[in-house]
Image (tube, rainbow, N blue to C red; front, side, top):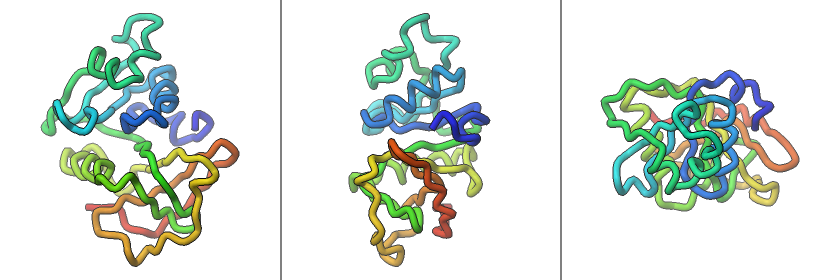
Length: 173
């Protein structure tokens, strides 16, 4: 992930709050980038912004947890103007040939994506990355079964490879 040009160039990265993306949150804050993370299950608000220069020395690992994000993050409203350069989402399975993905089935990634579109924080050109294990790569997610709000991925990062999907699936508007 950290070797990707799109990650290196990003100033603000939205990363979901799930455990598998904890290392991505750490890389984001350690790289002096803004971290935008949703409130867990959107229970206490929508998003929080974390900035490494505000987090006390040595506390970045804690800030990468849901408790730490609540402690060190600044909640933002849907009216806040923030530009997100890169989105990192989790997936249960992803098709490297199309960029189609399956999440946990609760729709949080899609809801968060929709809120960021509403806020004007992202556009069609905002790259979407997923981090998965190689065993989560599948070649048979039927694109015709995807719904209008399903979020495709542009880049897949696994422990052994980086895959650029060149997806033609439209991103939700």
